[in-house]
Length: 61
Image: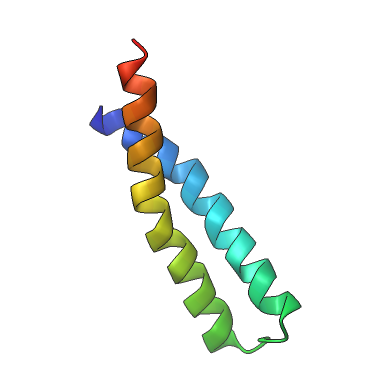
């Protein structure tokens, strides 16, 4: 299940980091510090999301 988690985190982490960066830019936070913080938050939030998705997919087997 760990390999599935890591592969899913590649895609989910990128998506959530990009979405949070877009949200930060839309709200007017356009400095490098704010953009990096938003990307980091999206990356960290992707860990439990990836774990839950991989667990659900693994249980379907």
